[in-house]
Length: 284
Image 1 (cartoon, rainbow, N blue to C red):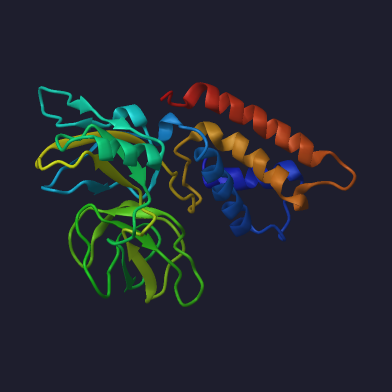
Image 2: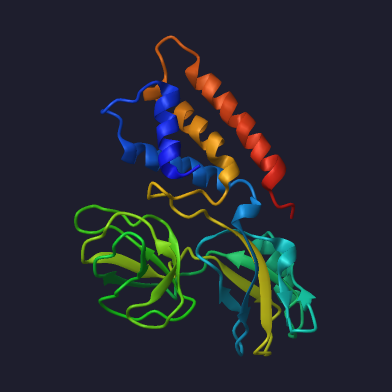
């Protein structure tokens, strides 16, 4: 089911297929509910397997994807080579546990890790020229992106918002190519762009180590891509019906007076969500 079909379903089920319906508002509600569901379950349609980075000398903190919703804890492997799968790294959940581990271990190869939001020291704010919908490149007015940087588009002078969706730079330049495609309103010149925002997740290793050139592989669950164009299809297609009924439940405009519409819509949404979780989640 594509976005246009989901919007039409909301109108049809509610019996409010009139010119007063705001497609933009329904689209925003669909994206809100979609991200809500996706952030609470590890759906296989949002799984990215065997992503990687290479360690650098005396560097213990590494940038993770901005779009990451959660790291698959048992997936982090250190010193991966073609014939060898690497050594599994334990990912600790509590900062206090990580700090205690760090202080009592002698220097050597990393044995444990911790995911943190980072200090924002790598953050760079700049501006960009107009960014059209479905664009694969952003022209920065100042600064330059590096391969692997993550870029977030803000609001332009007219109030149009690029949304809290991260894009990975796959080229190093002042006009980097990004992935996935930007989906959203056409942004006017001067929109604010943030490279590697301070809340970008970072992976910190312990104990300290001096090895470099070691490949680290990991798997993660990503936040869903924005649904903006009529033909856009959710990456977790099994959630379409759950999203539709949750949108209906959340918006009083779609409830008949003196009815149990909200309760009924919420129950139906829960049933569809249960089925989606049952058949399409990753068990960590």
